Amino acid sequence: MKKSVVAILLLLLLTLSGCGAPRQAQDAAEDEDLIVVGFSQVGAESDWRKANTISMQNALSASNGFRLILDDAQNKQERQITAIRNFINQGVDYIVLAPTTERGWDTVLSEAKAAGIPVIIVDRMIEIADTELFTCWIGSDFRKEGDTAVAWMESHLGDAPLRILHLQGNIGSSAQIGRTEGLDAGLAAHENWEMVFRASGDFTQAKGQELVREALSSGADFNVIYSENDNMAYGAIDALKGAGLQPGRDVTIIAFDSSNTALRMILAGEISLDVECNPLHGPRVQAIIEQLEKGGTPPKYTYVEETSFDAGNLTEDIIAGRGY
Ligand code: GYE
Image (cartoon, rainbow, N blue to C red; front, side):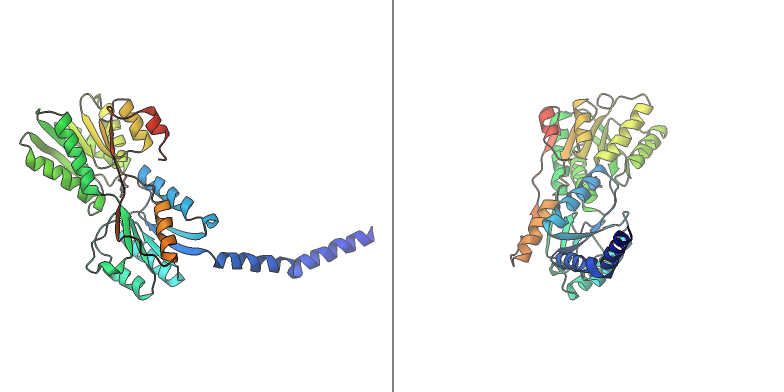
């Protein structure tokens, strides 16, 4: 009895006095092999954004050889600038930036450059005097997305007068700028298209709903909603239904992103067109970093292939085969 107590005590002592140390050392060594990536993410404002974060987390995982430090900026550029400075202080190997807005990155990216840390821009674009301050960019052609929507409106909505309610994304973001430019070009080219209400819903469902409610109660007369993302369209649909209107019949809804929920709404006849914007950038960023690690040079700008969906081409199989 006594002997076994002594044995247990001995074991305990052994464990406390160092048995754990070699394991810790081993973990640290394994950790040192990981590529450390600081990712400054815009926020969590939409389904697109959430799918984008998950994609980055899955690709830049420890089992793929990465240690990801994720910072959610809650849609504030100042927070992104602070996050980038923290990444620089921590000496990360790479910085990945999904920028809120296009402008205002010159100073902080000069600091990253001075520290010798490559910066990869993902999703939205930045506007910067010295393009050497970032290594490369990968994302969508937002102007082309807007043009796709306008071409669909031309071919599907005929010559009837269009009275458009326009829900914009965060002002100054590439996604807003490109999609708005597309619509503006459409408005300029068609005498029978009229803008009756335009405001920013910050890409969120709550604001989309609020704005459409506001428009309805102010007596705005519209028959098309051009919503610069899916989530604002969900809010718009709730507001229309709340006012006894039927989306798809009383008001044609155009949206962007093509997340699964929105595609189901096309099948239900509520959304008429959804222009695809692909958020699954994780594996693409992973491939870029792996290329850089091997001394390669990825292309400076890479546009992701995208399409659009309406009742004419969408099937259950398409929805089932998509990752977001
Ligand atoms: O369309 C929207 C998100 O920048 C492409 O941001 C992205 C946009 C996307 O919040 O849903």
